[in-house]
Length: 437
Image 1 (cartoon, rainbow, N blue to C red):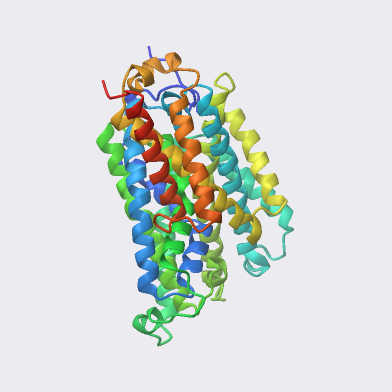
Image 2 (spheres, rainbow, N blue to C red):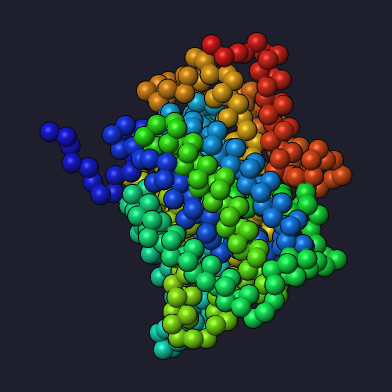
């Protein structure tokens, strides 16, 4: 008789059993939930608010393609190993080398949790909540309550996040489209709005880099979700549906909303401009769900990264502690403009090189050295693999040069770090006589 699994069992530090496999839609809908988030609308507004809509859409499509390719390639890796990103990284960087990536991931995802929670509470505002609840609510109480709800969802793992996304995403899409219809009902045409541009418009390369930086962590943690895919095709299909299609679509809808709202980049303010009681209730629900669906995934993946480092500790307990810490970050104001921009800048430099090296190691250099990415051999992985770590360091150093000097390859920081680290890794591996066996 098969052993009864706990409701909190989520296979944090071991492979997901093959019988638990999900199809491409079930995988992809989780990424739609991640894409519909308040910071994504903010980024859409930052890019589109001062630029022509066509340029903004071009930036979203290019960024979506880059992110989509990364997510598909590394998502296939996750579908084969059936291991989380943190555990899969052991094959490439070694048991201890992977800890560097795991630390970056959980810090980054905790940061995103705090950012998202802060944006949700700021976006709700007293206006919407006063109407719904009849009185104002202290900001600290909203953050603690919201953080607790998101943490509870993440504690139940993938199955809870998937069910929440299936319910929330159609509702959110309907609300977004209804908002667009309401905005353009006043007589302004989409063509007129799309042509608006100011002198402060971001250069295309900068715009693309901002968008990629915003969700690069989301692309890299694809194995946290695709490890549940029934096969590699389901993993790839889920990432195509969720990342390659879902993320640009949400950004484009957000950009059209911003242009139609006269450049207002705060999604919550746009949602709450209609003062009808029915609409205010829907708007408040939309703001909460937009944060909830994304933050469940943030906390879930952050906990998986820690669980990879401390496999003997229950993942639900790690999730609980992570939720407390992420809520604390929100309470001290990580979602402020300065902190948010600095956060994105660091992510653009440090995370993309690791993704590039893991992908290249899996597709070009699969051998005994990385245990053929066989989950049954995960405990036999090396303690440290120096070439991948050196290449990662070179890519990160190149990223700092791109970010803070006149050195450029593509004018897109995240993409430049991928190119530099990838070229360094392949070159050093070939000079060292490493090849796929």
